[in-house]
Length: 286
Image: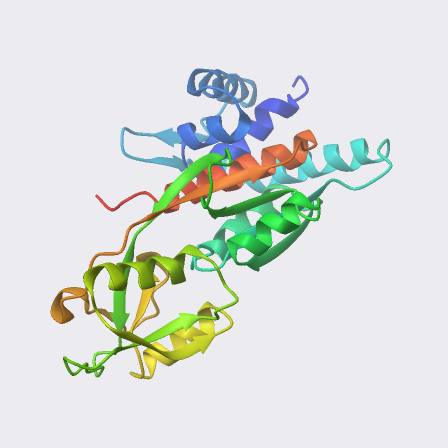
């Protein structure tokens, strides 16, 4: 058997991880046609179908599932060999804005680690303003944040907000609405959008709870103590959208963007893979 092509094996692993030719092409900076050609040539060389593709689904074949661990080992061995000629490990320092790093973040990180175990990955979860400051100082290679200015970036998704509270929460009309908010030191859109929407609607409100982070706010809301403006995708179990019931105004959505510095090829590939998967997880339902 002739030797395996590294790019073809990398293409197979990317398609397997992302379960999509479209997302794999985006992550690799390629096209679906090129991805298909590389995969077909790899299958011809191995004499087996690796990927089952239908109009609605991309999945591993039985032979593909068997080959995947060996393919990962093959790529890891290649990277170790290349690392012998590098003076430093490949590094990716990434920042996610709080409330955007949703429940799928652990899945995304697991996929990223499985794809490139030797990548020196570090993560930080903060507010958009703090992440952008760290990005500008060069402490972070890339950040996924709310768009708060006209700074250019790659759009990944839009975050939709609602007014959420515990089922037991009660608001007596004529009294200020009890809000659970992030700290006044935070200038993030989550806090500002909620306040501005209420002010425009002429609804009096009171800072009943101030938290230093999203988890603290969620605790206060889950206890039935206050209502909060939360992104739909990160709402804790048991909370309900009370916006219509209480006659509260809609909250404008926010755009989620990716900013990145110039990166080494492996780090860029990992970031593209993460961005492609993140975009897919945040597609609107239906």
